Length: 372
Image 1 (cartoon, one colour):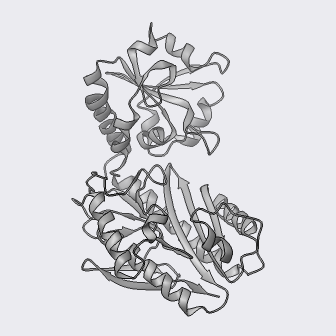
Image 2 (tube, rainbow, N blue to C red):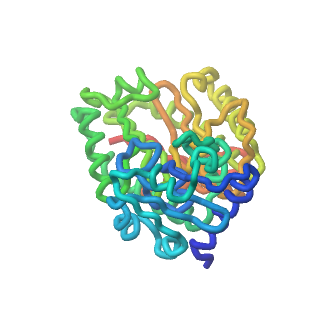
Image 3 (cartoon, rainbow, N blue to C red):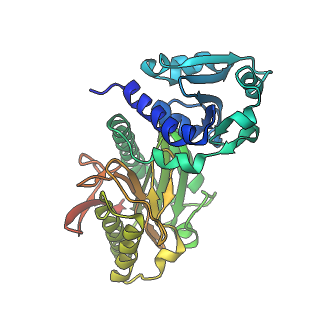
């Protein structure tokens, strides 16, 4: 088994070769939470969930990797966040919280703004994040294993909670139930939005409201652990509605087409074109215009959205999360690109009722709408 520190050094060397050296900089400062977690296989440098930049940074030079952290965070990072074999590869520059990171950098560089590049632009450095971001897309096996477990956990939470819901629950109550269940498994709820009967018709992005669910509900989560984010949606009816069931299954067909075309060598724009054709085939030609359809996932809920202009070519190990919607319904899960796409948030052992759909010569499993 390849050790994590081997993958860590591969990533560091890639950044040196393709980002640091060509720009003749003396150091690359990594402070974004997504890049920090990607480099360290899940260590968190953030404190609040809404932050883009964390409280610790990695400084990559030609011959070292230095963790810059204040006296508040060092011991927690070492004990709780870093794998030991990666921590052992780091030099650590600790500074007092009142001194600040910029002063710590001045111990190493005469003019940080001129000598360094970064993924944030902080301290007047050149911001190279747009060049770094694509390096995050293709995941290696240890990350995919983490992702599988996260997907399984999310699927189990849906199965635990959705059958307990009633029409009298408010969207905010349901949101709180999911917050609690995710937290019990050490999962960060980046997004939990609940769509009752009214909201599913009104909004594509419903920030949960203090209104009762009514006759139907679907819940969407973006759930993060070790930096990786699973996006998934499940739907339920409180009374039989054959028309909505049929619409849900048509919606799932569009999702199945997207997943079945998420193959190595396919451009995102090609998958998007297949999605548009699928909408037309089921009689909902214009619905794609009302909401983005998803795209590449990973260390963000969506790293890159698919459109007609998406030139990125999929490769093995890339995570995708498609989310086609028809007014009133939605289908969404996270999958790993391979010769056979693997839906990590709807595993084979799921208790959820399943629809099997044929698309692009594959049989794609999608979660059916649950009738309670």
